[in-house]
Length: 234
Image (cartoon, rainbow, N blue to C red; front, side, top):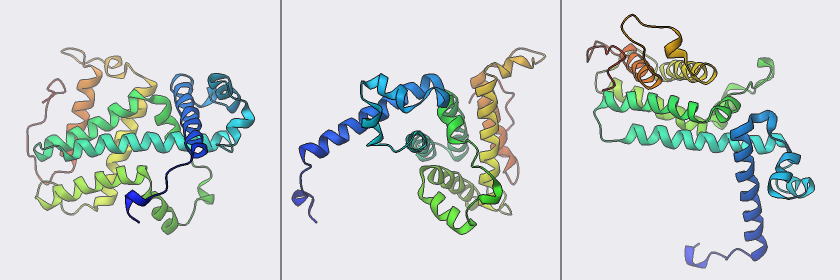
């Protein structure tokens, strides 16, 4: 169908979209400040002066609303990682920037990040692997993961990364490491300074940069650049 012939939204549809957006914006504000425990349908109703019953017309439960916020966060994460991966920088700089931006995005929105990786429940009740992968690949989380897989493959194709690594397992390992650093910095914001170094303290930004470089070098077939001290952010 030609875009010019698409039916125009009715006033009722436009109003419904405005209300839905207002609910999500309010949920975002509450969630950013108070986390999952502070978010409830009643709390949202107070925030935007709607009745709880009116909100239930748009979202059937708090869990449904949380799922929307999680997917929105992963869309933001995917966009950030994508932009870092597609910049016109040398390969190593792009990869390190990708890893750094992931952690920075996570610690900038700690409640969102923690909720996005909340437990999926009993491992015995997880869906079949094929179904799980098909759904995952379509999600923003899956697309962010595939960006990391793509970087591993690119590094292997140009002879920088060890070609013997399975790119999916390598990407999963990288993600696990970035996730660990992100959660550590969320729960212990002063971590880099808690364990002192002999010469001088290292700040959070320097620590993230150092870890990004460490991850890059862990995949290399052979060293491609000297290891930085942790104080060098180049």
